[in-house]
Length: 266
Image 1 (cartoon, rainbow, N blue to C red):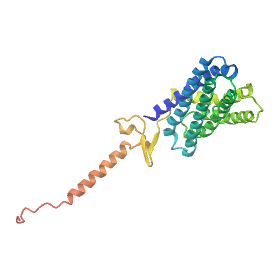
Image 2: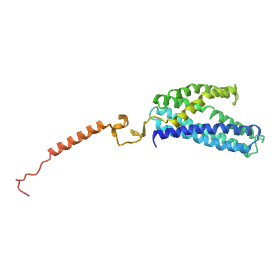
Image 3: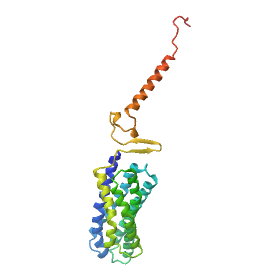
């Protein structure tokens, strides 16, 4: 799979997170608050499972492309994205458990609702800011996307972290106008990144597959001279190599001792 294909996969998965997360929030909120609409809750659960898989998929798709630039940061991004997916699944299990015991009015159900709400705050409510702080510097340094895209993420991350901290301390409600405004830059960062990767992908880059090995992920052509020097040999280097090889063969032949026709046979 080429780097451009991996980038487009990551872009599509970023867009999938938008397609699933926004409807899921609208579908599950009425049931968790009033107990009405259990079928909508189940649809929300299915969408959030897809959301969790899409979150994990973005990290898996971007890792081979970006790991050679800043390995520690991109490995942290994979871990943070995995943790985000895990908290989303925890929230799904909690709200399905609420439906299984009879709804939010059932004794003990509010504890499960609280688990869901805290999982939502720590996962989709906080970790996207951590993801931006880890991934945006890598994309900015590698120049894989326009500079404006990662800069939006770097600006939005502190805003979302501040809002999440205020919600954690009880200064803001988990669903509030101020909290929504603080999340907008991060939402714009992920949306713009998803759109760019889907439409434009990334430049042709060499991706390390094993320690000490780099392979080209661009389309191979028969014209060796059209491949950049950093991705492989140029036609001039190849011609020089063949000339040196022919010279060695000529020297080797000249050193070969031929049998003397006048020497007696054994």
